[in-house]
Length: 421
Image 1: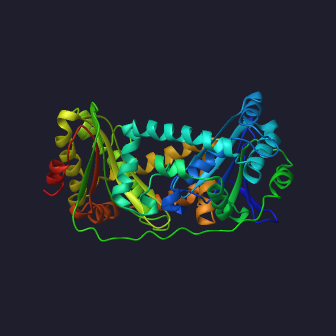
Image 2: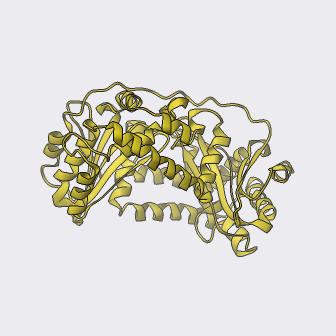
Image 3: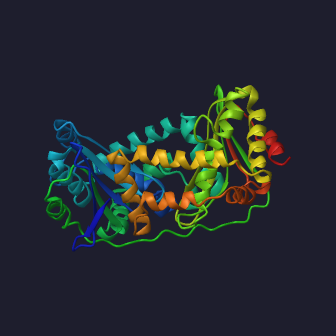
């Protein structure tokens, strides 16, 4: 499906040709994110992402960059996570050279102008406030803070208002120099590729400057001996909660049955939690289950937006569904449906050039290899009913539970009582 080659400076390039399309996504993925930060500069990965759009030597203003992108009807954006940052432009295939030129210039010669840095601090602070005002998003940041504690994985990706306002130009330069090495970057082209795509990559990215490489501190596991619950007070009309526990890292084969288990529990309108919590009791509009992995740890989570007057009942129903999976095997039909759902969702996502670029870029930067979709599905297909029950028994243990709630609750006492039943 994909082809791969390496430039002389160590930059890996991956191409996925989709000749039936007229568009192309150009994406640069970097092994940088909030878990690489120091407490004093928490939020700097996200800050640097913003600054790359504020002007480079070749394209000195944000307006010029935006005008060029808009002028060809393209779309550009970026994202920062805890272990990965990526920048992308989706354009018509004929404009791949301009997309490559803009992205390479942003990364290798960003101006990081002092006046732009000071101006952007205000923008980022408002962004943080916006996210905090959105409980469906903010509850996830609070949950990971609870799950991972005062370690880089537990810190907010955007930092806080104090750390953001204290970040200096030298901080940004030092951080970029520590991670934005060609050997820590992957360049991905997905869509209708020109015949000279290798030459284009060489032309625009072969001169990326050599920089150092920095490895994040390993996550320090601490044995959890009792469930934890936290309530963040906010005058909302709905209770947003995440119930989760420690899961499996990117290299643990248990992540495949964990994906199947999450699908059975909370993916789609026929999942167990959707039927029990929404359809039969009308306690929530949205409920879902997820398993996600970092390099050295993972999480298995259930998210729900529950009626305020029924939040305790909703939590009890969720916990009861988890326990059923520990004592009863799923049916053959349920297991088959979950596997087919995973297969179908991958098929749908694979039609998106952006999804493919993000997937291949993230996998290579973090793992130095790419696990194909066929390889994933083969491991998913091997999952048995016994695997699901064994996994549920391993995960759904009272003392492993962590619950984060946002709503008009002054404390988490009643939630703790329910978790400890």
